[in-house]
Length: 209
Image: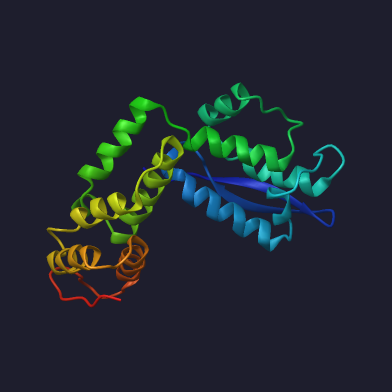
């Protein structure tokens, strides 16, 4: 199911400008929601409100930032942040932190399901390599909110996910990791490979860093 876009009115210099934000329903929506939020905040010059608190009652820009964050929330997420203490008077910095915790926080049962999701991840189940990497990244970040989850384990799961479709890349980077390359080296390579516009990346030789 594709992410629904939610219109949000941003007031700047007494002018109302309508922008869109992806609806934030669950963990898989987090990266897109966060990216779009940061883009809008930079465009309107109000990104500072994510790191410094301000009153939504006396600061119009602070109220705009809060509205950008809260309007696209699904009823379920809104219920979660309300249960966590959020109110309409909560400033933008605290609002962001409450939303982040509500979306990324997972209990022991969901930790197990997220871990199993990485173990069973396979490129064949995604329309694009980039889609798989985005889903894997969101899952990895959620796992890290529950406990320290080794990045090398995460990379090993990613390599297993591409083993059948990209055997050369799998073999090359399994060896690279065993002989000194870091997990970050491998992640950069995989992202570069995902950005490759060639018609096919299956079964071709690839070079290491």
